[in-house]
Length: 456
Image (cartoon, rainbow, N blue to C red):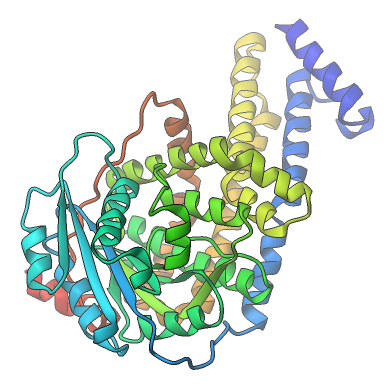
């Protein structure tokens, strides 16, 4: 074992760092830990410091407002729903309440492997419904493929100017489609929007999701658009030009994170994804760690799939100085890898050193402690900045929101064990997340108080 440590130490000494950088009083294992911590920290800073510039831009520049545009585009709303009879009516109601001309909006729902009354509820709400039953090819990507193929056969893809994609639990602001129409008229063929939450204050889990999506919208998507880069599709609430659907032959993205896959495909092909801050939607977040674990495990596995299928092309684009390719690659690749390598390697060194020498290494223990404290501090700062800029968009009791901020870093750091589990699992499949909060935009703004009384 000492020979093993000696070999690693020699490698780090000769190839990575001058001898003087590792204090001689450290043991071999501690010196190796010092090298690992130092270099991974440097790489992490090189990869992600630019995102603090994004935050600066978000604070000094207002989100882009698009000029008024003629309301003459025809839109198809596409919704993939699986056992969503409880929440789907709220989305359909918010679509009927849009300020955009109703004659130019058609709503399509795919009732995907439903065992409840989702299809009947959608029909009563005025949607055109297609029912799909498939034991294989399960997931949102396949449901969207099925629905786009039916629309193409019924109307032809170019009958509509663009398609708006939502999840069944979403609720829209009345001006949502009108604002997306303005951004669409500005020349974007793919657009994403501001993602808010129905149930911010229900648990530390739902608050973690909500705060992250607010930060993503205001501090990542928004600066990307302001600086002329490309935003990224984030799950739900996005627009796709019908010409792009026709060009792709329908919907052809089937990985576990079909939204990230679609974003990577667009960016590699030179398609710039726009962002419309004024178009706001709400969706329901998981409220228990068990449900969150299942969902984020799927997301993590989906990220690995995107890396496998698109990672090299993104890196090649980054090497050709295409900023959007670099930004997308940083979004899916190094954060988990670097964090996990550091945490696991220092933990392994600590355990091996204890077993071999019988000495409790305070140095390695402090490396572990510093990693956790630094990670907590960075995520708390990012969460606090997001809360500060998005204070008016947080719809729960403000005192509770402030208290939940202190759980946000724990929520984010939990991605590490979740991602390790996703990487080690033999198979990760798409699983539905139960949605139960049927709320209007007005009820959401009241923190869900009225809806809670009704549910009781």
